[in-house]
Image (cartoon, rainbow, N blue to C red; front, side, top):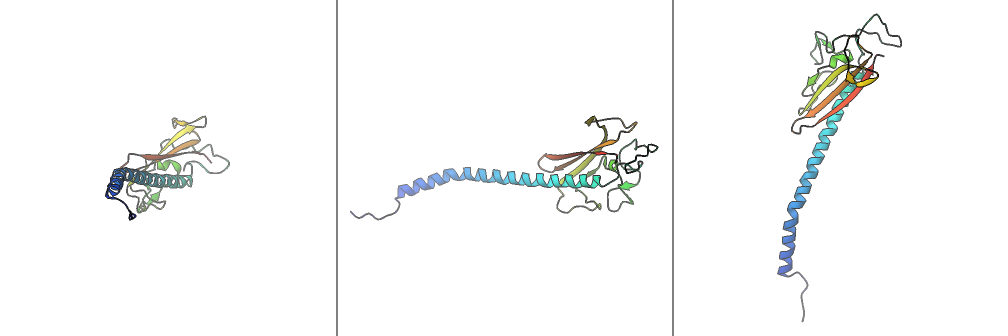
Length: 177
């Protein structure tokens, strides 16, 4: 008896059934991987935005009332209140730009601005906030009273993005230098 090589009808039905059962499972894993990659991309961008702002903060004076350098002028005390002084702004149109670390206290921007105060294109789903507080060298996580002001400021930058409820925090401590 001479049989032709190939698949029988029953074998084809079995293969189609197996593929049909496996396909939804494969799609589920594919979309989960895609969602994980999207979240990873957003988290990476948020970290970059937080670190960019922290670098900008680090480039400013510790306090506008204190002198910089190896010798601290004890006759000039740090500001008792944290935040921008009257007329200071971070926007490009601001007459006076932020000039010291504590000016960033209470900052909230969406979309984030670059160091020149212009909106960063393509980041409209992100919100960036900053908080500045005085801390002692013995406990850098606990806020202390600003009278008399200690020589350390703790800066916390938080970046969140819409649709996820997630956020990224970057924290640094700046000493009077």
